[in-house]
Length: 413
Ligand code: PMT
View: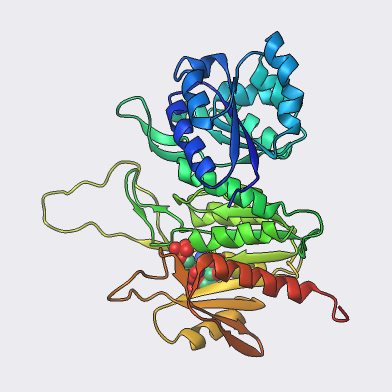
């Protein structure tokens, strides 16, 4: 949990400010203490009084408030924080961070921060997609700032939807927790420090026409947990994710893609790497030629014919590389029959070093492995198989990462 963790929450102005109150509650119920800094725009949505009541602390709003500066001061606010959390982070605040502006207490605090910063953007989807915002996001990531969200969904403006909603308070609290788990105290082992890991996760969506696509039930839970566990073990992680609703893990560079071909391009761009773990459920097939307009019924009663084209096999591409092949290539096998035989065949054909095999047939009761919270795997090597019990996907991820770390340990250790 978050006992003894001190969070400095910077609240900038947008309709999502109201969710930041619930976020404070979620952080405090996990044991964190929270101090809030509000921008002038944030105060137009919710009063400092509300944040004062819910944090149980003084709320800081003025850079030039003599009393507050004398009493605490923004530098001391930072010194007394373990994490700076910006939620909601508006497009304007992110742009100011990129340029190092410091014209109010929030921006001055961010500019003076040596404390890690996690930000939860919230804005209209058109503002999020704007190239200026995307340039700023890339720069902030390059500056070492971690992101949670934004998520896709309905916007505050009625009838509008898209990517830009602030992540839900529970997901932000989980990202804060993950931040502390991926930044262990000095002395805690980080066996993958200095290693670069590429992970794929989630489904791919293959468009049929502007409104329809081919997809599968993968949620991204398993792949995202692996990325988080690798980061916790000290690795530099690039996570290439298909369309999912699970939040981006903290401390990981996330590349969002839709289709198999986009996933392949993002994986290739992330190489060279020491380790590749390909947990995504990539569509083997895509519709040949996406219709430019929505396909309509023609009244004849005859369904339209869909022609398929084969997608690139990302795992096989990496496994058989002659240049920049990661030292360890781990593929998955999602099977509904003959688990081991099919996994062994994939190990051989796709040039992988290990295959994580799971039976994804839908059970008549309980949750399925694809989409669910648990997994039961067989770890298949060229010279043997390990059987693991049914575990939470996070435990599977931690165990797999421990196995990967052991693979890289010098034999005399
Ligand atoms: O996302 P969750 O809901 O948490 O579920 C996790 C999971 C069930 C999706 C995951 O554990 C899993 O099994 N992932 C692999 C799913 C899959 O597509 O398996 P496959 O047997 O079809 O593919 C074998 C391997 O080749 C996989 O590593 C896959 O990423 C890769 N592949 C497949 C097709 C393709 N065109 N390119 C690929 O790289």
